[in-house]
Length: 98
Image 1 (cartoon, rainbow, N blue to C red):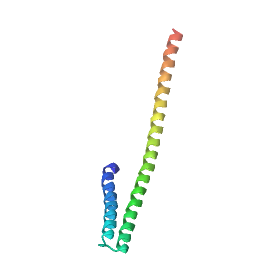
Image 2: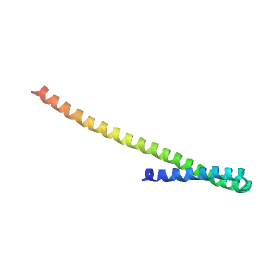
Image 3: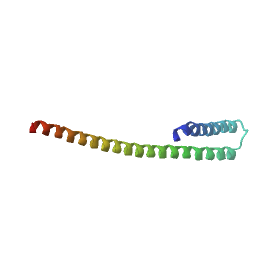
Image 4: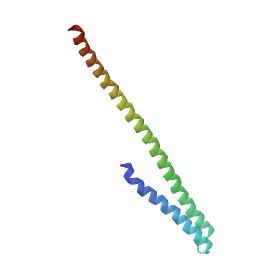
């Protein structure tokens, strides 16, 4: 599922950030122009924003799924214990009528 792709997404992000740092060092060594470094930084920023957006979206989906799961679990628990209570009340009636 989604969790299997997360390491790959984070590696892409890590690679983009690493490449941006590398380009800044190359600019310091006069091997890249400021405009080239700026372009690389902009691309790295786009990847960073996309990664953060994916993480936020995943978190929202996870919260919704967990809420739904807990609601269904509690509804089923309530139903189960209502049935159990009914059976206990029937058993009590048998003893009261005996």
